[in-house]
Image (cartoon, rainbow, N blue to C red; front, side, top):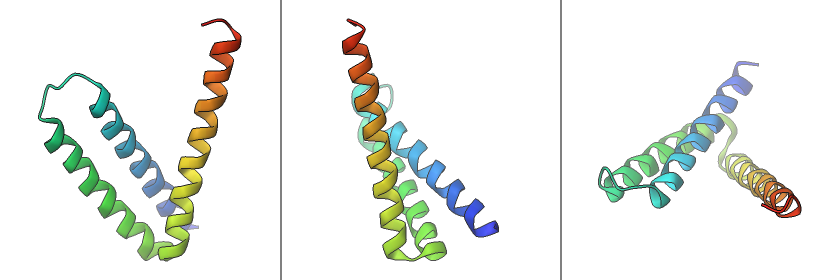
Length: 87
């Protein structure tokens, strides 16, 4: 049970760091974007290493791919809804 909780926490943290880095690419440059994004990438790498230690390299990659796939599906659904609403 504890392992699942740790995996879920790492997946949330990786997702939050990805989102933060993506926003830095499109948001206003208050801080050096390169430094900001590099720091997020280093954090993601640390989380990924911890995830690999918990579930193994293959499953860690499968979890990350599944997370990205699900987020892309959600984005497409929201985009399609906005277009059908005339936005």
